[in-house]
Length: 220
Image (cartoon, rainbow, N blue to C red; front, side, top):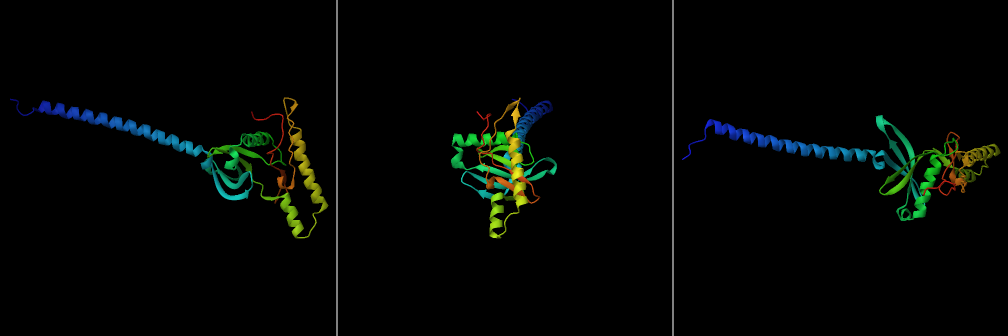
């Protein structure tokens, strides 16, 4: 018959239980660490996503091909900037030609740096749909300026008309003169119209919407 466990056996049993407990805690801690790492990666991925970087504030326009929003772009150290987001409508996103046209617009305009051309700041994807982020021009389209002048029955001063025409010509001259390795890029806007000319409150004149522009370098 076996008697009651000796002190040595009790110590061995307690040591074994302690090892099992420590081993279990280590496994749990390792699993928790892996889980926390995965969560952290997901959080970083979300933080780098376009949806978290841009916060929509209001809808500016609702056209037949794209939605245009006023948004706030946020970055590190409290950086904030108001921008304009242009997002293609879902029914058109399935059209390869239209999608390629949007990418062409992004590539063309991102290479244009001129005071009379609206700057493209970013090309991103949100909800499997591409969008463009533009600088905000706080003002009106030239078509809105014409409409307000007509409503007020006030003709636009000739000097103002000539100034706007000269500024648009400066933008076009810059775009037409763009070259790469000595070869002209052949950029042609093809839609210079009042709705694509912006006039800011400070008197800046900027050309926008190179969506149907033609260039020798296209996205393949």
